[in-house]
Length: 256
Length: 257
Image 1 (tube, chains in turn yellow, purple):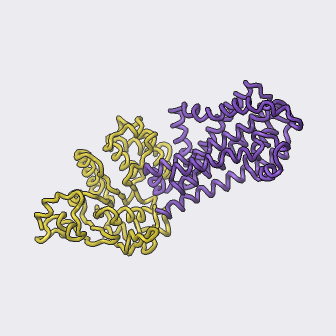
Image 2: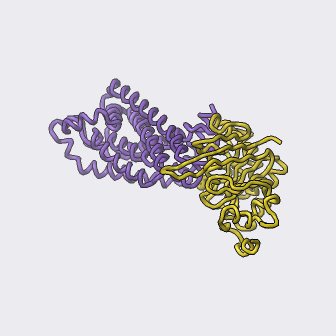
């Protein structure tokens, strides 16, 4: 199976001497969902920023969709879709205007752009709100628009930085179904970061727990669980020395 | 071609907000209107000072107020990028293959469009107050073009500063620290032969003065093509340099992430 994302020994330091990434390596197979888990400040978002060409690593190398992020950042940007932690849409513009502008940023215009915007609005259930300004959208609608914007140019690799943070359970379940559909039907490679262990457990075929700027454990969710650590909460606690902030504390402690 | 399209689409993003809230244009116009009315009344007697050439003070003042409004209006351009950075819009744009120059040029073009509208309205108000445009409509148009080029340079500087510092307070501080001194160190409000020699010396290098002098020559006096042409060229070059610098600021922003 081909590799869609390959990061090796990534190092990133911030002044004065914060080592956000300390030799992080990971590899994501094409067409799979990969989850990055870890406490706040572990390096998840830094990793996403480097892989999406927003930021540059001080050391190490990375290839996304077969393209080196330092040698050809524009090539990477054409191949990826990015849904950031914050809403990436313009609150003063309507949903349709946001989508149309994103098409233009990818060099898609005219009839083709109108068709793709129409499809995106329909498939994310935003047709009724297409002409409304985004600041009037609910959290779930904004998140769906964010994902729709990340998919307009049909990327090979999709990055989702905490896609369901702040969503109510219903909107979260809906987002999960959408992410699964993209991987299954569109055969897209998806890298997501998440705070929710259950999210990684349900969606990801592979996951990596990141702590202190490096991957502390990596594998399929089922492989990581064992008789000693029967739940992801327990695995997480064992490898990071911390309870997961959204973990069912009693369950984790009980498991140990 | 894609670059031109992308620039225009970024401009339209601003235009749509303006069309939805045209009151904003009125709010930003209150300041230059107050300047025109207050300075016009306060300094009316300047026209009687021995050595003051030309007609009434409103004739002299109008081009000055137009260039002053251009820099103060352009100074706020960077606010949009600060909101984009805080809202996640900037990071989304920068992870797309959009031409970086379009992000700056598009917002600068939008700033220039608002300056053109504001300048035209101020020119009309001055006409109502008795300004005598000896250069005719063509002269006023040249004044507006000069104000637009000056505004383009300052809009780029504002964008660059916004992207580098990401702080509203810095931008507010910079605009208030720059607008009045640059205006006073120019012929915007006072004829150059009547100011101290050191201000005259500084004014030679002040882009606000370039626009004020050339604009006054075009709109209010018998046009001096040498002066107007050279100042148009200088301001266009300045706008271009500032545009390149502001576009580079995106790289500095990304290096800091």
